[in-house]
Length: 173
Image 1 (tube, rainbow, N blue to C red):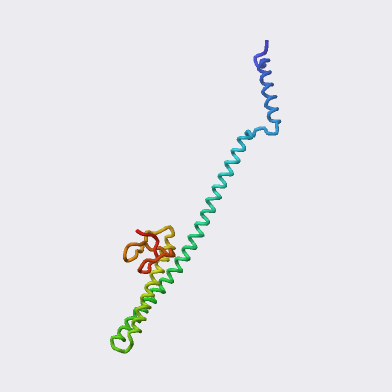
Image 2 (tube, helix red, strand yellow):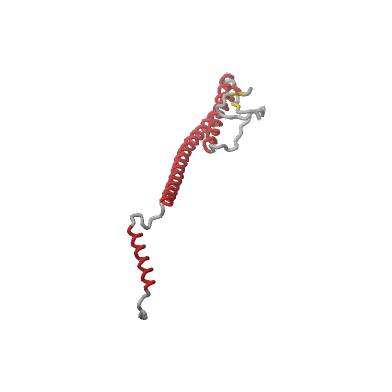
């Protein structure tokens, strides 16, 4: 019979078996590492996550660059619009002056006709710049529609076709 604090032989044998098993397991080179398949899945997941983060970063960089370029273009076109408005104001004053001179008989009708042509040309230039600004400011469309006066065609830049009034045409309404 064993003393009160002496372990049982069965207990000693099981404890010895557990210690030896643990020692063997710790002695292996891949001890404590997950299985190969699990490692592959973890590495693939990390790769996909890093690729996703990289893709988002690149997309944001391109978007930021595009916004900066658009802001630069908008500033340039806005300055050209302001100059065109000033030119139009000057041309209108010259047209009024030419009309007065023709009405007083100091100039020929050709002078007034040239002044009207220059005013029409300046108005058209201003309108083109305004449309260019709208196109730059809203690259995906802003709902701006310019129609031919006979209301049969929509206007679109550089489409090639023109209506009887000389407007560029996109497609029938």
